[in-house]
Length: 311
Length: 305
Image 1 (cartoon, chains in turn brown, cyan):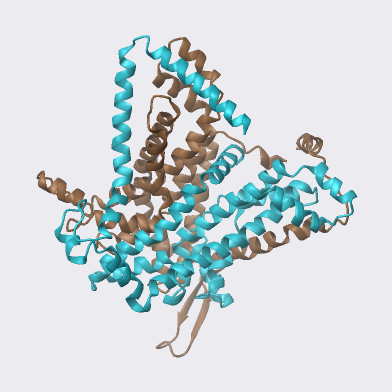
Image 2: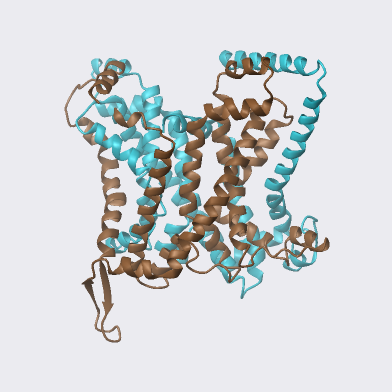
């Protein structure tokens, strides 16, 4: 720890010129918004989750707040639909994350290799969906999932295949398709940027030794961009747990997406339709802890320590 | 500039070499190139076809939407649809558009400023608690915005800020990723010798920041602003929770509301389609024309974060 400090100081000579309070004035705005809009909500969520609001009588007599301890958590865990929503995103993640990463990595590797013509056009095509807000993408695909307007479903139907994209068994994968369509572009760009930064000499030698493109990609390129792969995988996993926009939008066109289809939707439903922000807060705390645990496991699993945090 | 040209030249030379190597006559390579091209064409169709459908669908009347093939143009009703979009419900669509612009542009400008001062201070000054601030920034990047959306909503209700512009603008100011990027940019673009020289010339710390620091960091700041802009433009859960007044809603909330209502009011289906197209045009243009900035931001974030 101390050696790191010394090294940092040597590399960049910080000067303590002028008044000592100057740097604090600079960081004050961030500290204020951080405390008010990140720390306070978390504290409020935890406190809020330990209480229950009871409306007395017919609702005319006002309401009173009662301390219920872990009562809301017990209610959340006893709620089969809420637990099911976690199982659903887990199943979704197990399929969607690898598919997303394989498509993104394959495209990035293809763009990085010299074989491809019209590279700029193809990159534009892959990236364009990312420039479309997630909610709008969900609305757009929502139309493409309805047999009455969708040219794709009409085409399949003419071949004798009646695909129902909104059936109870398929709608989860229809949601995954929207998310993949939207986000492959950004993941591809991150991986592609990492590939472009690699020294070409590293695999020129392997190529001269007769290694094939696929071999070079799998055993040289991918291991060398491991940090970028981890970054994109981590954000995809977190995005999976937070799934909200796509199912919430599809809910407006099909009854097969329930109001508590994903954890975030359950939180939203409990806080608005259910009118029970205490239960909603308990659910939010549970989701927050679940997200934290999953990210930590993933980071630990890949054995990578953040270098900058030590300085 | 010369550097880039040299780089391009070397790449080109390498490519020539590579082609020379291939033309020696291994057939499998050519077959591979064809396979790759076919795969890319399939991918391009997958990514572009829905957008193409949206463009075509927005030119159709409500009747033609259901009765003509999806990828074929029918009677060109785009301008009629646009007029309908502009007048429906007293032109509420443009109000939503204006709100989205307010939330994204003003929000992004304020957020970038907060990130810039913090990142600059972390890079230029050494002070007690600096390590703690850095740890906080890195740790809080792990907190996804949607997890604290519900608690933020509860907080805003207590503060009496629910259903106001401020209720959307203020929470967006806490943007740890932006602070991280600004810190990295400031480290790379603000030489301490220059700060020292300005001090010797008698400039105050704040003047140094405003007249020199901000300018030196400007490239990075564009990236942060673009990310913040996108975050706000795409934001959905928080506005959905916080805003009940139609007049305050951004496009995302307004358009999904229309989609929901189109079950009972079918004419809203066409409006949702045209509205979706109109709402993505500005963002897609901004995004694609500013590629240079955000791509550099991603690389910096990917390497350091």
